[in-house]
Length: 295
Image 1 (cartoon, rainbow, N blue to C red):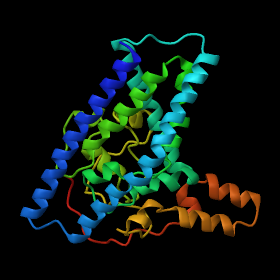
Image 2 (image 1 turned 180 degrees about the vertical axis):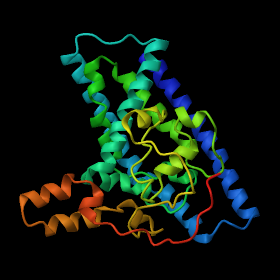
Image 3 (image 1 turned 45 degrees about the vertical axis):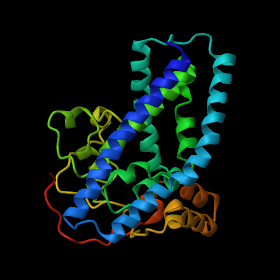
């Protein structure tokens, strides 16, 4: 295998999950139309989700090019050996990327400045495939930084980026309510049931199920929660906008406002790095409708 073939394989993998996601999205739309359950507001929310790709891809194109160049430079200057590119090291790279993604994801929920980006992904009150591509514009920057240690472990940059791509592509299909519980798979993989929990704003669902492909990391590190009743989706605070520009910057106005109100360096530090719940004093979501048992 060569870096070029790995890149082609990664692109093919991404395309495959894009097609799977597109098929699920089409079924979601058709089901909503036939059952008359697709509300206009939910449709606008889908448009807002898709629109986040505009700033995200503009930044991502620059970030990926720069990050790859930095990874290559560091590997050439400071790493004396690297893993060969074989079927086994490809699998190992995906496993390593998934492990680092767990911590990247967990940090994004626990560190306020990172949450300003990741909150965009959690700002929808719905769960459908369009939410899978609802990203903050700078999330790629965080990912590039968090996965940097893999260079010094000895993974070639091409393998690192392949692993990151596979982990992200896999997660496309899990943003749906069409697929119920999957039995034994729910114990090992990040499935739709496990990921619906992650998007829940109920107290018992908050900050749970961070895994990308494997849910095993959550079981090992104490952040696993199985799906019980259907979650209330979205941010803990009362955020319900379908305006694309508001969605793009979900938490940034509050973040900047809190920084302006800080009266000491200690308060600045708290605004920057404290968990969002502590820094924001969020109020419960304005949603008291009864919820059905999870499928």
